[in-house]
Amino acid sequence: MQIVVDLNRCQAYAQCVFMAPEVFELHGEETLMYLPAVPPEQQERVRRAVAACPVQAILPGELASADDR
Amino acid sequence: MTGEPRGGRIVVVGASLAGLRAAETLRAKGFAGELTIVGDEPRPPYDRPPLSKQVLLGRVRAQDVGLPRRRAVDARWRLGVSATGLDPSVKRVLLADGDRLRYDRLLIATGTRARPWPHPEQAALDGVLTLRTVDDAGRLADRLDAGPRRVLVIGAGFTGSEIASACRERGLEVTVVERGPAPLVGALGGRLGALAADAQRAHGVDLRCGVTVSELRGTDGRLTGAELSDGSRIDADVAVVALGAVRNTEWLTGSGLAAGPRGVACDAGCRAFDMYGIVTDDIFVAGDVARFPHPLFEYQMISLEHWGNAVAQAEVAAHNMVSAGPDRRPHLTVPAFWSSQFGLNIKSVGVPTFSDQVMIAQGSPQEGRLVAVYGYRGRVTAAVSVNRAKWLEHYRHLIESGAPFPPRPGAADGPPAPVPVPSDVPDPAALSHGPTVALTGHLPDLRLAVVHRGGPVDQHPHDQEHP
View 1 (spheres, rainbow over the protein chains, first blue to last red):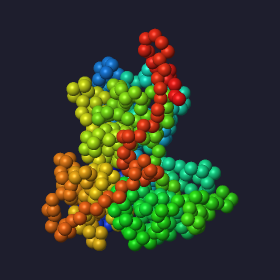
View 2: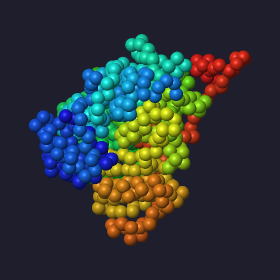
View 3: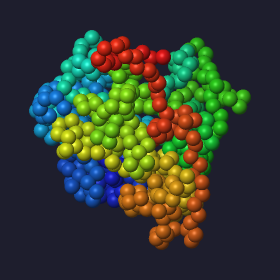
View 4: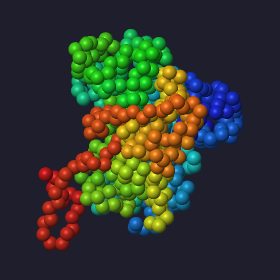
């Protein structure tokens, strides 16, 4: 699983940080940092974080690749 | 438009964020034809914002910043090969390996590249780097891991400032050299630039403004330092050239499109203009390389080096590529971007440099959190928040609705009597680097004369003569 967060949308509600603290982290007061490549054991937590984000800023998906046919 | 909008061949040149989102949208809108995506890097699309943040801090490996796809795009990927030419008269894209790709519709999403240090022999010194690609970020992160005695950052736009911030967070000594009066001036104007300068110095950056690097020096092929225009010298083992970006339009030379250093001009529907200002119907443009008119900014042609613009413009371009005329949509998104540095979350809506005045509407520099509102001739044109992101939606609405500037006081944390002051935006014609928005409307890139050789007018691009 790969994720990208639309940081224009992100308003630092930090729901993702509660749901998956190993993947999402607030850096300073309201800067979100995250791991784009989600480790397998974190995927369920990240799915919950995606659902919990009040502004739906987290986009999960398969890694875009050249063999996606 | 020729052929069936949802069939035929589409070629997307550019395999980054805009190219990927366009490809997904084409499929989502029912495009069932042959789709080819060309990219000059050997890897699939990836995300750039983490490169100057998480990657330099050592939290994320450079190669892990790939982008998720929203759906299968069922494309033929031509990666690791660049496009070298375009002939619209026969609808062919020429590739560096000699291949010619036929298209019915073409999307140009070739973006930008890092502006290189202008002296090649100095740029070749070991330790001189730029930051734009995954490979760049990996190299720079390795250098920072090795613990250089001092890092020299040339240019204090967003990229340069974020690099300096990462260095300081890692405890590295860093000198930033900026030709303008303050960091971020090209994007935010002088008033907020002064605040950025304070933040850098408070975090221990050796910030030198109003000077340039006149020479990078080395011994045995390795960087040892730099000489500045004020006569001073800096000892450094690493220098990062952060002098902004160059638009990747050279491959369109001779194509007859309105393409030049300021981007590829297009209409509000992302359709490229040819060099006579005539709109094409089968060539579209999106992302950093596009140059388009925006009604909120007096239809100035603007180019945006913004993540959100790449996504939104790609979606509009793709929609229009597979839609009949009356169903086409304009790209009218209010520009927005973010940056994080020195503990500050900086976010912007609108175009701060399209302004004559600015005022602090909420918070204050002393608190380390504020919203600055920008106006142009009595109308709100932008807002920038520092650690105050939740408010930007409100200001976006003011920008979209053409609200008067200065805006009415309303926020509880506003200063008692907000005072608009000049926004100190530098003349865009003089800007050398740093803008995330380039106002490009009134500066033609190319002048030419058309020579009709008698008989019926049947010009092809290669028949034109450039004086």
